[in-house]
Image (cartoon, rainbow, N blue to C red; front, side, top):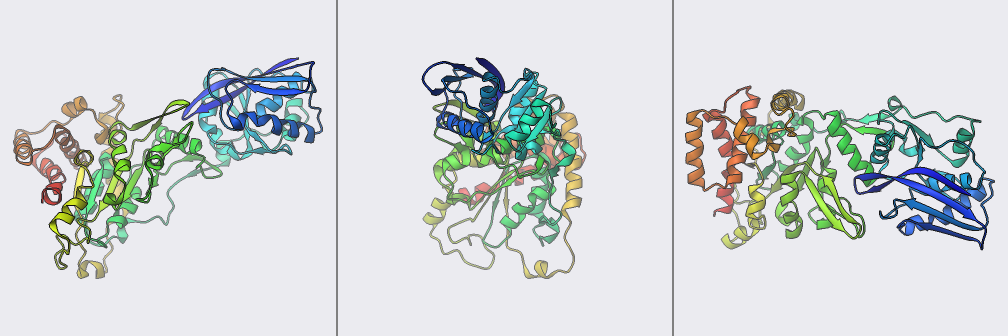
Length: 510
């Protein structure tokens, strides 16, 4: 006998429909799974056999073949256990029901329980696009699946509940988005009101948040670089639904979505240790690469503390992703692409001892050692960072002041206002903020006064800036102007942007 059941496969972020075809005929007992299965899929035979037996059903004896179509795409993971289980029962005439508009995904335990899997959200989205009306997913994955409109998502705890539903004896309740939480910023998250002094650095981070610009902070130990970076998420603009869905998709594939969370509404903040491998940062895996930290920070912040301590290969990997907003990884199973539109925030000391340029403590490094230290950060990578700021040590009066600094909520109001201006200006262009503008968009939207143009020309020639640096100065100046609600870029805006690009001459030009 023959049966066919719908399922969904996943390679990287790309989901695709899979037909699970089961055929049972007379012959010596044999169970074969074909269709480019990996080891985990082949082991489904044993899990399904035990689950059928422990559910009080009969596993058909004879020559049994299960085909996962299309056969030219590699199938990975235990996600096909549940559709294989259903196809076995249908082909052996132990389950009779119409399943044309249904799909099944899930891992089986030997006693019939259905375990959580990774990547449910992109798979449910793909099923909905292909006309599937009902999809059955593991109970613990219900939160992420139910945010997709136009498809009914049934969370299933075990095969007993599923069979009762399909036979019509006891119906399952579909998952509803309102039953689950949307992850938002915690009320006790770090706030900028706790940062004393550092007014220039805080303004630079405000500009960076408003325009989505990359930032480099240089200063001695204890000046507050990490403290500032950790508070950056509290002033980032609110996420749109599309951004939340993109980020949730990546966390779903990585299996990092918190239990019971349907949608990530908080911009992610990733801070990998400097010992991270290139694969850990970019994404890795022997067959199908998993998302790395640069993708896990999509639509949020990737913070690299102690930047020169990172491995050279890991740092150079970042060049293309932070420019293009996507990283392509090629392995034996093919090429997968992960979105990685991030704000890159870096912090570093100016020299090995950390006190080069300190107002009171002398630097103990030789000139050669200091130069070698900062040169671990290559010129091409540095050129891709829009804003370079010095974070000086905070003096006693600022630290002991009783007055509270400006709160993150007030700063965020200005950031949201500036980002709204950008969204309206860039509507329909594919860019969401000033930092993501193309060269053509930069030329169109960054109109300067004649005086501002003269100032930029002088700085370009004096500082020997690259074409990339020229565009980045214009985009940063555009953001400074947006914070002041100015249509045209003036000398004050260009002056600020140039200040944010000239710090590398102090430390890298010594």
